[in-house]
Length: 318
Ligand SMILES: Nc1nc2c(ncn2[C@@H]2O[C@H](COP(=O)(O)OP(=O)(O)OP(=O)(O)O)[C@@H](O)[C@H]2O)c(=O)[nH]1
Ligand SMILES: [Mg+2]
Image 1 (cartoon, rainbow, N blue to C red):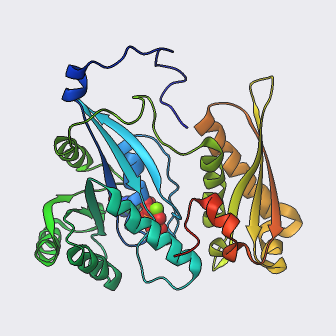
Image 2: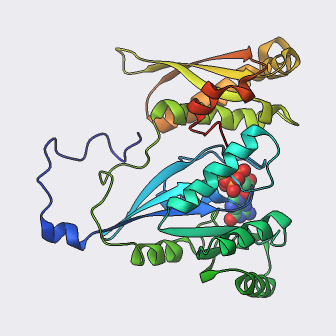
């Protein structure tokens, strides 16, 4: 569980008084949208910390991830979700189900639409499903850095008329443009209630899981075609060393021997490069030296294996 600092809370915090609890706000905000809309980039920007992995490829995020931020008296619990699309495989179905479950549980839903691709059929399908379920949402027209301003107004207008939207924000998750306004608005509409997480906590995700995601990001960035979609990463062991460093062993599961050969690369060059970049990123994330050991294993059926779904935090039976 990443924290802003190692320990900023006293061991025995004084019990919150009723008055101070009554003054606090707290709620869940789901970030939803089609694959590649920029949900994970926005989560990181809202939290001010890189938690979620981001790649130019679609379907990067596979399961829900919480990112927590404080604005004044409000604790905002953002839920990054997998992209919503027409699923075919079991894994796709589980990912899309996890995304809709994230929306169902949230106090507010933010629908991100890529301003450069606003008319995608999957976006229309998401808007229709929101409307059919009687859900209202906040529209965040994202990637505004890519589109001319006069065009943006027309796009926002068309989308606003098409869906059950309370508000429209124009943002760039990448540059941060408009994100503070969105965050302040969300803080102002959170329900009253005690904070659900300690104030220095940034996520609910265990470090072992975040570390596996860091490696999966490199798998997505450095391997191509269908291979990233055929791969899963799990942290097998995590050993704190006396010198303050940590040894992390991870397995990259692929489905075919040929995929293993590609992941390893010529004389192991590819896996070495994946490991080097992941290790550098992990050292930044954990703020200490990391010894990373990667193993590539062939497990044809990982994509149909209930245990892998449990490890991913996904429901196998959807
Ligand atoms: N120019 C620009 N690019 C962006 C912006 N936000 C995200 N991107 C890029 O869009 C791509 C996808 O971003 P992600 O944050 O991974 O998108 P996502 O919605 O989480 O995608 P999935 O997890 O696959 O559903 C990456 O290459 C990002 O750098 C933005 O505001 N402007
Ligand atoms: Mg994502």
